[in-house]
Length: 241
Image 1 (cartoon, helix red, strand yellow):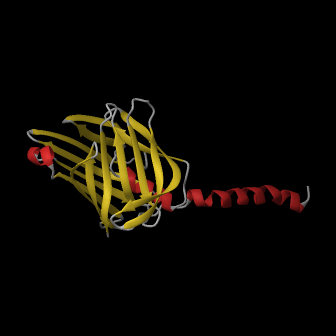
Image 2 (cartoon, helix red, strand yellow):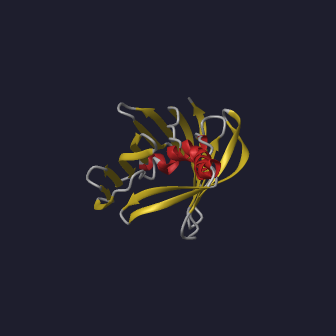
Image 3 (tube, helix red, strand yellow):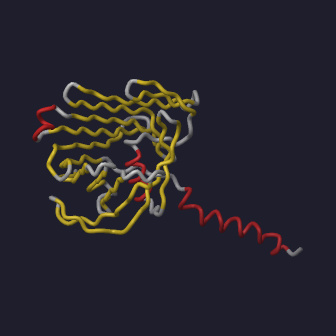
């Protein structure tokens, strides 16, 4: 065997590693931002939502969303939703803790998640019912998955993007499929957006479509949720800083 022949497998391996380098690169956290949204139900104005993403100490980030019903029955019923995610961001994002609180008149709904990486468990509650499931590196809550998606898109990833989301049934894979570029008219002017669809395992009529800003680090400009009965909930951005 010649010296050149002996080195050929090393050259092939090196080339393969170089090709994989963009895929293996650490996912950078999106820059901090604060966004305001108009919230509509079935086309009618329901209220407003504020989303804040900022850095904490020790490589952690906080994502907070507050939605307040300010129109019609939503205002009368005192509708409010608060979601808060604490995210550990090293090579990739991972949820540390998640808290969801919804108030509608005299009714309330809560959901929590605590990720114990050292203990190998993810513990939480859903409608005050506790659950526990095995830990997996890189798990995310249903709220933090949006900033993970933003990070992946900014890193040039396309196609089907998959995330592991724990809940009371175990750990599920959530898949988001990137689509085409579209132009959206917003109070901030015309914005170039990438359309992304969540691909669900069951075809029950529920769908989620996101339009993320290609010009502003893939911050969501619009989110449309369709329910099986035909109801729609929509968030449209009004300001960003």
